[in-house]
Image (cartoon, rainbow, N blue to C red; front, side):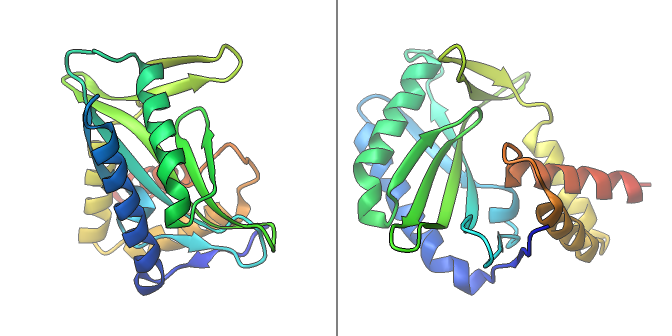
Length: 209
């Protein structure tokens, strides 16, 4: 069991501001290839960032990067590698010293080398909004292959469910369930955005009329 609790908006604000500066720098750097917008999602957008002081995990942000490449001039691999390269180039000036490719996201981490612990991190998913739903760039590590894949649940549907729970005064329950999921999660491959989605869906199905 972990000991996660919530990070206040005031505590998270300076880190979020630095992250926005970094992403603006990346936007300028890749502009000759493609443009993109970014959005803080899930726990990052609803002041539900958690932190466990007894671990070296730190707290994390979740961001969707929407790339403007409607003519498909770039392959999924090229898009992820261009963004990975730009993030790696500029991140140290903003406190990040690790940039990793995982299945669903690019993760940047601010690691304290003296204490060998992660201060905070950010998971960046590269997405595309189409008429058939939202897709993201998936990395198959075994095959070293990148591809566009559909999200299992549309982001807009998830957020509409979250809005319903907040409007109907079930949000304290959401906060408790999400924190419990974080504290009892034993799967290192299950990140905050997945636990957030599980929480919203479970609470919504329990209360929706």
